[in-house]
Length: 75
Image (cartoon, rainbow, N blue to C red):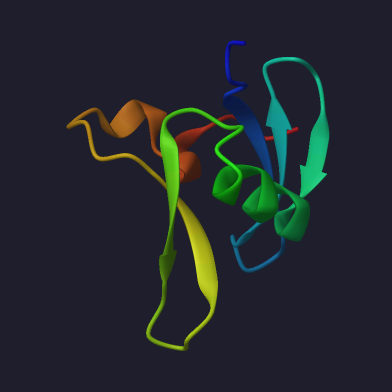
């Protein structure tokens, strides 16, 4: 089975990502997306624990800034 990828994001007024759209058209709120990433269902991203102790999603480092989550189109 091919894993989904994030293709677009929603952001709040502060510029924080609040939701993701996958290449299959699914829209996931941040917590649902975090669980999907942790389950290994989303390609090219991983989770990390921030200084505040919360878990966050980030794109895998590949040297290409165009596919960073913050640079994805909004929906």
